[in-house]
Length: 117
Length: 110
Image 1 (cartoon, helix red, strand yellow):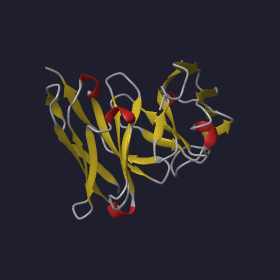
Image 2: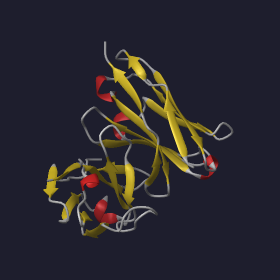
Image 3: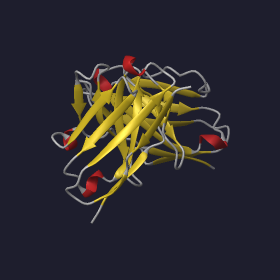
Image 4: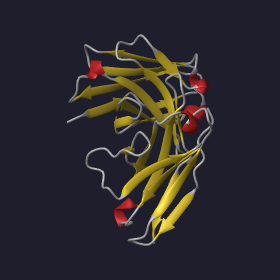
């Protein structure tokens, strides 16, 4: 059974940093593109970032370029999102998702990030 | 990277059909055959319902169907059931390994 479990969310002040993790199991993690998708409270879904199977290619939505970094450790079956210079508008539930290959086939349960002073 | 446009809400009685539209541009919906649809119940993670415009993943009832014409994709739910009440989001590949989601539609079963 495919499982994606996010962790690392919490309350952070504007300008601060946070690192999200996503632990994958039930499939060959190194064979899939992976993504982060977020959802602000009461709002819609927004794709945030993608990473290729070997980590050699990474893509971001314009609003997080230069602030967020997606990465992965295939030996640990884990996906990460390093978030720096956080803003109030980054407040959201962050989901990790498996990309198969042009859609998000499996999702984690999400982790809440709140940016507030 | 503007969000795709969906109606805010649609509703129907049990057994009826409802259709949700998803309008984009030639750079996303109109330019690729990679439109997907997601169902999200309150407090839950999204679930893939349709991919590649009209394909259903294993386990998704055939009451759900998808189509596309030009820059607009559509999701139709036939034989509406109480458990179909949820938020629905379209998503399109937008080139260069980027994606754009729709604004979301709340489906209400009357």
